[in-house]
Each structure stands twice: as C-alpha cells, then as structure tokens.
Image 1 (tube, rainbow, N blue to C red):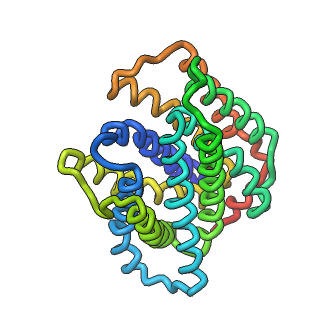
Image 2 (cartoon, rainbow, N blue to C red):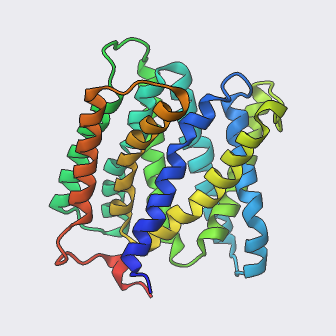
Length: 297
C-alpha cells in the first residue's frame, strides 16, 4: 500500500506537470481565441466533465456551501486567472509567470493566518531559493514592456490563487474535491460571461483549428489536474504542497525547448538547479515537525 505522503507527492507531480503545459499549449492558440474566451471554455468544460461524478456522490450541499463554491469560482476563475491574463496582455508574459509562480510565498502567509500552519525554517529556505531560481529562469536583460498596472495585476493573480489554494484545502476536509472543483469551476465560468459580453466577444467560441488543444486545456488541465491538486493538499500541508509551483517555470521551460524550439541558457540551468535544491530541502523537512494534515482520517 502506498504511503499517504508519497501519494500526496505523486498527486503533486502529476499536477505540476500538467499545469506546466499551459503556456506551451496556450501559446499555440494565441491567434485563434481571446484569452477570456479560453478561460470561460476551460473552466466550463473542466467543471462539466466532473459533474456526473458529483451527481453520483449525492453529497449534501448547504446554502453556505453554494456560497462558498461561488466565492471560490469567482476568486480563481474571474479574479486570479483574469488578472493573470490581463497582466500578460498589458506587460510581459515572463514577468506575469514569475509573479504567479511566487504564490507559495502568499500561501505560507494565508496558511498561517487561516489554517494555523507553522512556518518552518525549511519553508523559508525553500521559498528564498525557489524565488531566486525563478528569477534566474525568467529574467531577461531588457526591462521594458511592463507597466505598473501589469505588475499590480500579476501580484493580485498570485495572491488570489494562493488564497484559493488555502481555502480549497480548508473546505476539502468536508466536501469532496470533485464536488468543490466542478461546481466552483462552472459558477466561476458563468461569472466571466458579463465580461465577455462587455467586450463584445462571442461567449462560447471554439475554433476548429484549436479544437483538441482547447479540449485538453478544459478537460485535463482544468478538470483532472485540479482534482490531483486538491487531493494532494488534503494529504500534505497547504504551504508544502504549493511549494511545488516553484517547479512550474523550470518544467515549462523544458517543454518550450522541446515543442517550441526555444533555446536554454546556462542561467536557466542554474535557476532550475536552485529550484530543485529548494524543493528537496522542503521535502526532506525534519520528521519532528508534525503537520496538521497528518492527523486526517
């Protein structure tokens, strides 16, 4: 039988690999679909594909739960992902990527405030090394292209995704991850409709040329990967689980080299090493530090 913590790390490994394909797949859709249309379709499909499992579970959902799902959907789909897409549009995609990948810094803070998790020395070391590594991977010599608003939106995206992570783990103790992800995704996608209408864009638009790629983003990335993410957080502490997001830029870079033909420099390799070291330090945290989630039945 697989050890519970090992199972949590396996879930996280699957999650981070799938999440790391977002930039490569989305990059190929740039001229085919507007980012907000893609957000709507991604989360609508991701939620709907999980809905049959929700119906079969027949979980008792209170009015307070529905309100929570709506809040979670708005927080992740509309605010976090919307802010990220706007940050990319108004500034540089590389800067937006480093800001969203820094969400573990805010997760540690929210975990301490909301979940009462302790901040260990290993958490701090991992965050510092990971953040330096991300800067080395994404930083480019030219500093032009960013605006104060794009930077602010990137920070908002990072903070709100961190809050989504912590709140999702907190509720995952009482409601199954499938139910929470499915309903919050569907509700969140519905709340993007007014934005699309305001921008004068078709609400549901899937170009034939990008059909399979959009299906992948919706069904796998916004459906299956979110399940593995929340399941991992039910086993591991929220702050430790979210640390793995420091791996996203490194993996995304490797995928970009393979599928987009982008070059990789010594600076990027050194950045990846720093990220890996930071992750290993966090994973091999002293067994004397007891996590609250270890007590979960």
